[in-house]
Length: 86
Image (tube, rainbow, N blue to C red; front, side, top):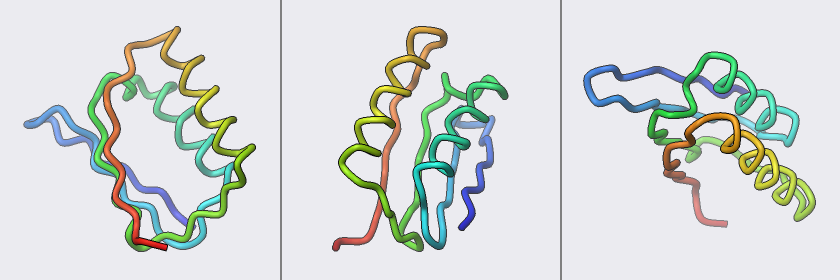
């Protein structure tokens, strides 16, 4: 699996492409890297059409909790997700 990001400075947006099987560990690492690289304030367009998401309901709650914690430390811009229908 890979999650690749590119900052489009002209539009102040992150363009992210997820491919392969996406796990909670990879989502967590991606968000923490965005925090480390000061990218959380940028809008993010996530293209996951080439990805298979394997997250349990508990994993989703963990991601929501992590986003809540990150938003307390930094401005968190909107994220837009595009995934294939299941």
